[in-house]
Length: 320
Ligand code: HSE
Image (tube, rainbow, N blue to C red; front, side, top):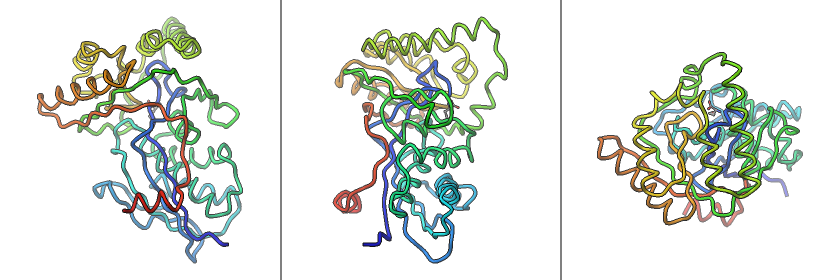
């Protein structure tokens, strides 16, 4: 049977995990984006409709991460197939939750299915990365975990440099997303272009401590290691409203630590149980609201599964 339509879900991601700038990231259970791919007559992939972006995203084939990624995949396969893409965004834009990566990943997973799955999941990485790179440069700390799930070390930008790390058994995350857009390009422009050797040694030590904590299933050590970043957070702190206050609030409510999620402004707290994470997320949200900043608090966990193709039943449930 010829498939003429496929839909894929791709999860939100938390990149960097504090100290691991551009090399560490994790996939979340929710929220996520869905992309539908349908065959059309003319060659190439185009975005025909976007829902949930408030009209903010470009549909231009060379500007939307979904179409850039889908066209890169078609080129990689030497395919002249034509594809219409519809994007259902559940991820807030420019929020530090890997919104651009999720659309790129869902697009390549859906288009690959439409073509009869010529590539395996890891082989989709380069095309998804091309999509992400069109808005924020080549780094795979969102795209990697979004595609394969779990907690990932992405030591480079190829599938060979993507490593799965252990997921601590009781890891719960409390996220808060204030209603302030921080485009990744702006957050990257705020970073230093060089750092002293001593700082490099400290940062590398922090990443090593983080990996050790994951392998020992030690949440306290994990949160402490994540917070050892002395390069990226100080340079971006001014873009994140009430960062130090939020860290205090999260700790007071029982969180073990707090870092900026990706390029921000979402903040991510590490918690050891569901009740604490619920409480931390709610309190952070209320703290922003009391200061006149609209915010969304979420309790979620690491998803061991990355992007996946929706079954007919899942599509039926999604579209009601
Ligand atoms: N590692 C990236 C950054 C993630 O912090 O800029 C955002 O795309």
